[in-house]
Length: 186
Image (cartoon, rainbow, N blue to C red; front, side, top):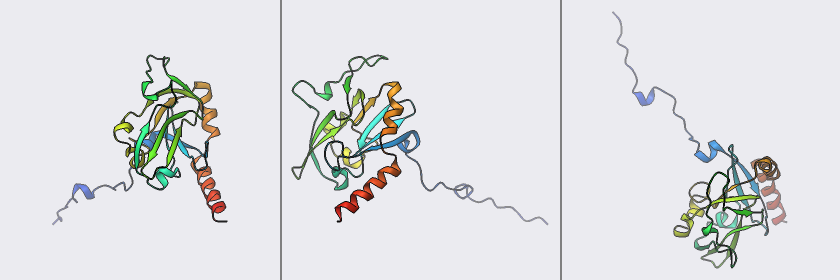
């Protein structure tokens, strides 16, 4: 007599993947810019294979590090330039604002009266500024590498790889943070 085979429940029939990668982790290569203008003025630039770059705060930026409450984000970076007025059209990105690494993208004011300037970190054309930050500034702290990104920039095609190489890899960024921490503890 044959014994009856009992199949396990379907949820137990395959190995479960414990950690799911985010879209950012799957499709973007992170690079870090540290101390752009001020000490601990750290940013992350996410490079996509199609050369589009997304600028976010690095985990070591004081806004994220101390989980500051943001009360205002101002995209009026000069008397003549409002990043929210950036209007881009066509394949050549006509109308896009040209940026250099220390171009201000916006000014952030926190509930503790601290103020920060957020920079582009790379040279290129500003394709999009995250308008959602105006209504929901907490996204900058709560979802920095997804809904809380600062801007999307397209560097010139021949400059993209060079700019990527000039910024810190995640490993070099960690080394920088360890070194910075040692200096602070002296």
